[in-house]
Amino acid sequence: MHLGYVEIGDIRVDAIDGGAIWMDGGAIFGVVPKPLWTKGTPADDENRVRLSFFSLLVRTGDATVVIEGGSAAHQNAIVRAYHKADEPRLVSTLATLGVEPCDVDFFIPSHLHFDHVGGVSTADSKSLIFPSAKHVFERREWDEARNPVPINRNAYLPGDIAPLESADILLVDKSAQVTPRVRVDWTGGHSFGHQMITVSPATGPSLIFVGDIVPTSEHVSPRWMCAFDTDPVLTYDVKAEILTRAATEGTMIAPGHGGQRPILTVTRDTKGRFIPQRVDSIAPMPQ
Image 1 (cartoon, rainbow, N blue to C red):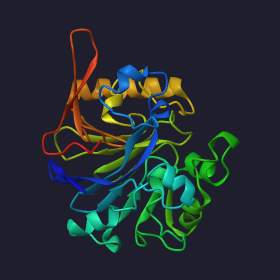
Image 2 (image 1 turned 60 degrees about the vertical axis):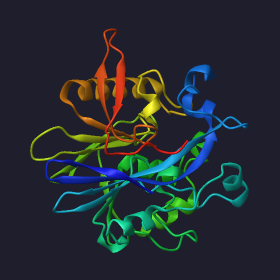
Image 3 (image 1 turned 90 degrees about the horizontal axis):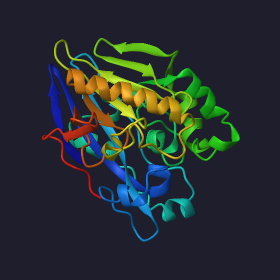
Image 4 (image 1 turned 30 degrees about the horizontal axis):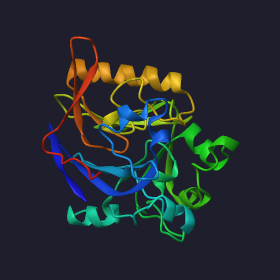
């Protein structure tokens, strides 16, 4: 589903809700008390919340870039049923925007968990969705995805990762300028090799896809984070730095799974708290 678009200088960024998976709210909000997080994110009768497969289509004039691939396409049927996982709809939405899979020059995920790359290969794991695209992974994330530590094994599915072996891969060590307008930088925190993606026009504020450092727009507080972050202290520090930059410079933020403010700006109140504000041209996601 197309949520709308923003123009930042000479760049167009389209926001896409590619379906969703329903995950345990306690896992998504960690130590935050349930009475607080349910004010903005309702849970179902099994304590699950809707977590969108959120993607951005970035057209810079010299490159077509897809950020995030979503989906739980390679989970087994029982797990998919429990999580009420939608079928991938990234490709169909791109088609409505005039973009075919072969048109994509770069695919850049924030990390390689199943809900961020499950939709970039076919359900049988035999073919890549974006066959002509360079796939941009942080080196440590790629290493972890192929040989995860035991606690991470459920996040990196063989059916997601094996097809990526045949991709044209650009491995990044910490930071790289992927195109003149698109940059990636390692953040860590949520996963060992988690990266953020910055889209910068020739002039004016940038847009940062922050991935699961800020999982949804309802997580715009340094203390609100997932229960399964590999390094919550680092998540806190990186998030505080990004939000401070956004409040100071007018940078736009795109959370990893969107939320009620899929692209947002940030201000600070008199107590120094970060206050998210939805960019009006981008519709809220369903709940």
